[in-house]
Length: 367
Image (cartoon, rainbow, N blue to C red; front, side, top):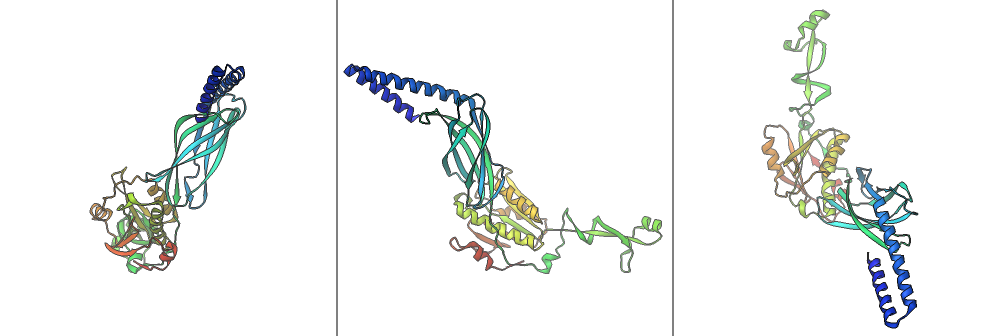
């Protein structure tokens, strides 16, 4: 647009000089430039109606410091009289922050048909990232004149935090925790009569109440029901909100690394646990049971896509009130200010300057 305005001003200046000095040469150059600009504008308008650009990010999850491919599908619905130069403005924002970075990317539209172009973006801090396609510049054949049209397309990707090894020791009470749960142990029997673990032959010491009389009559030997063992969650891991709105990307990255490292240490030790956080969309706590790597990565994906704006929510008090009848042994709460509390007491405050991997490796968590 600036180049077009400059060209129009130059045409007016040439016409003024031509009239002032009665110069046919200046008038000729003015009309020649006017014809060039007019043809360029008509070609750009033709291309703007014919060209559409769609932005997608195929990778829903990515790792830090690894390039993420942003795909631009450029489609020419009409013949463009040669390839067309394009530029797109992409706005990037880390969720839930408000700071926006804008970048112009060079693209090229095919003379006719569809073409997918891949641009790489590298992110360094964990979290959710939203990319928005806001403006499209279409150029003429010279690559000098252009017009801009607005567009609004959004693509989202999640950057997983790095995981650090946290030394962890579980007590016998945690390992043999018995609590109400909808999930039962596949390898061990228990005392929950709501679910049958297996039916087996009677052995001395079995309770008479557990004898399966009908099956025993058919098999002509005593058979007993062995009840199931609920796989309760002895540990609750809460993600706080205090100070979340003032977090910088690097601090949020460290906060997520701490939470993920604790959760992974519990998974690696074979300890089922609950991960819970406050989501403004639900206006309530969201919680997930985590007992394997699949669920470990799943809770991170759900958390990174959550809308968390309220910073005045006391997650610990809210969880204790809502699930007051639920049995568990320990509650860990990770706050955005890099503070970890264990059972309501401060366990550790992480430094903002030290290497997080080294600091976590020097700790010892006893549960």
